[in-house]
Picture 1 (tube, rainbow, N blue to C red):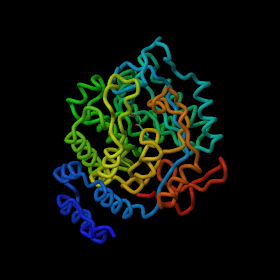
Picture 2 (picture 1 turned 90 degrees about the vertical axis):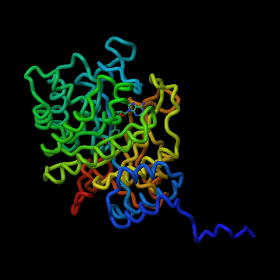
Picture 3 (picture 1 turned 120 degrees about the vertical axis):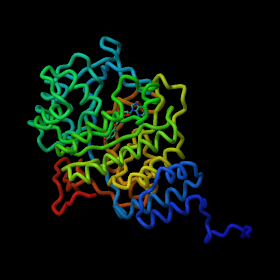
Picture 4 (picture 1 turned 90 degrees about the horizontal axis):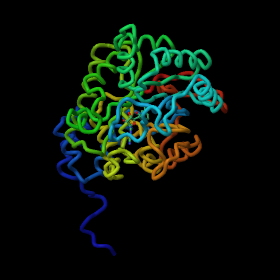
Length: 394
Ligand code: V47
């Protein structure tokens, strides 16, 4: 017999998490201090249980996935962010920009694969004209109107306002892109909302106030968006918590003002050192990944979804994260240039619908295919439509 001093029926919880558990039960908002206690605790099991409670309240046993394709129209970038393994300077080996034929080809492949969404981001190209971006939207939208275009980080939007000869502001740029076919904004470019980290790791990029301004403007114009946080490099826990609070405040603003759109999803992105200037750093551990995903679920009480981007989290950890607050897995992806296959240079990073569904089922959840706006999708091979009776899953 094993000794009985730790009975399984009386499993212990870090006592510092008790008040937080009571708040979660009462549906109360967690404070900055609560966030500090969560990060300080080694009791990842309880943190996971708490996040799972919130997740099940919102989504029951459903776990979403989507059939998508990412493409990066150019890796040429005026900036040189230290964490980035993607950018090249114009003329440098490996630098590229897509012309019309390549853009058309990417969209055709997406359509043939039955993708519901195409996710497009790129570097801050010093010479491409504003029309390049609106023409790209128009071409894709006119040829493939069913395909939702989720494109351009807030950083690119500000860049477009700077290069536009007609002096458009952020609202003008977003309106033009929306008129040309842009459906929503991805969550990239947020990194970590802190000036010290900004100046050290991504100087030259927009600061947090601008990033938030772009998303506020998109929400006012009726475009949904996402938010990310790049963690596990040189930021502190306090920086992560401030980032959460700033996102939560921005979401409150969208809701309180009755704007027609808001943030849908938080996507915590673990730093992948690759060949970046910060490659000497180890990147976050698996435990940190799970805690980040779970604490995102707990702190961002006004966000409907927490997404695991398996390209960065790995599919194995993504599967586990479904029990740690995650309700959404992105996606079939296919090609992804920003971070490479671990330990290598390949950008072919594809998974199949059957392996996504298998991972979800094995973790004890019901897989549901969604479109970009979290409406359920009915599918017949590559053909699909939004399911009848498909309220947006909040
Ligand atoms: O903005 C860059 C990050 C982001 C590295 O909105 C890195 O649905 C880790 O935003 N290690 C782009 N991350 C990806 C992104 C995204 C991905 C999936 C879904 C959605 C969505 C958005 O990737 C960049 C930057 O923050 N990034 N370099 C790196 N070495």
